[in-house]
Amino acid sequence: GHTPGSVVLHARNEAGGALFSGDVWHHPLQVAEPTLTIIADEDVTLAAATRRRLLEGCVDTNTLVMTAHFPSPTAGRIVTHGDSCRFQFTPD
Image 1: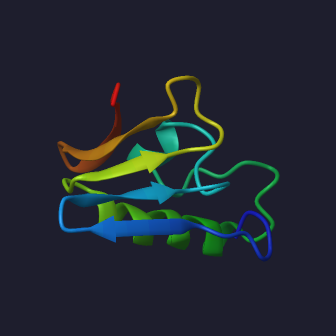
Image 2: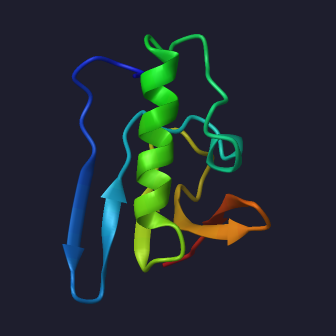
């Protein structure tokens, strides 16, 4: 929804995985509220749906999420936080 043709890579093995999220998230607030959009999202409905789908697949798993736009450190895990999720920066 952000950029037509953008790609997300999700590598998995028995220990967990890694998600290279590209332009899916531009700010950690979008993890807690996936419907938050930015002006550059070309299809806001698809962008929000993509964020939700990826959150559902990564939340509370051993998936290291690597973002392109978060401030350093840009890698972490998505964890449950109340009724929502949050991005927990991880030094590994």
